[in-house]
Length: 307
Image (cartoon, rainbow, N blue to C red; front, side):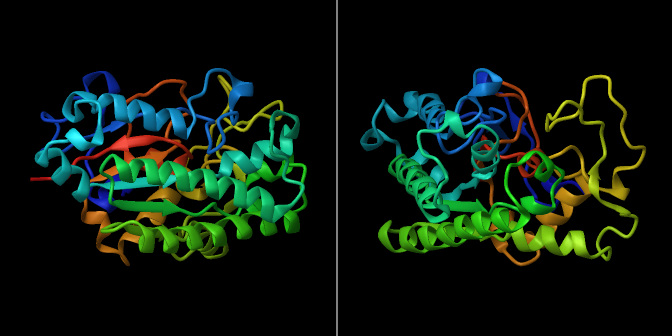
């Protein structure tokens, strides 16, 4: 089972074909940029990367014909569409990984665990408020997972205890922000996917992945300190036996469980979805499935509500 099947969502389309009227019945759109994050400088070391702020601008520009360039001119049909859609946002992981690997690239150094988390959350809050201004009402926010148990831990310049403290602080602040925004923004709804808890449970138990026998190594060959699969590298024969695809991302069976576990508890998964998470390792928008949204970290996917 893929995450799309678990969440009952359709496949996304491509950015170049974006047409709000035509896509109302279903489907979605992906504004993904791999290695991006909450801070605009995140991922720049790998080349051109559009952060969450630029992804929102692209989404806004894609709707400008319907909006007539201002939220005040939005049509009732578009208002209805966006109010029923769900914006999925899974960000923050890249910020913590890169801040330990390349701290010199950051204007904000994570010298204080709380200060760094607070800075990230405050910027994320501004982005969410911007989306709200343009019609978004339902948000699905993903916590950061237990990076201390991911293969990427080996290249992070932090101990397991330090990573746990950093992630716990961010996830706690994420929940507080969601609670505050729910009170401050009329008719808004914020849902939190407890990624940290769910993935920890999956790593510690084989009940949901009975064939899993490797919780520490990536399925694919990762070389030279990179996080992704090496070109022409070796791959495992059966992803059901592995928890991790590469140094950072889960395998499809693990993603399917993450989606299923949340959807079993929340009715939000039956909604059509707009997703901000990094669903692609590519440098430009491309077709994707929500399963990919759960794999990586920072993307805008657009799934209009079904009529």
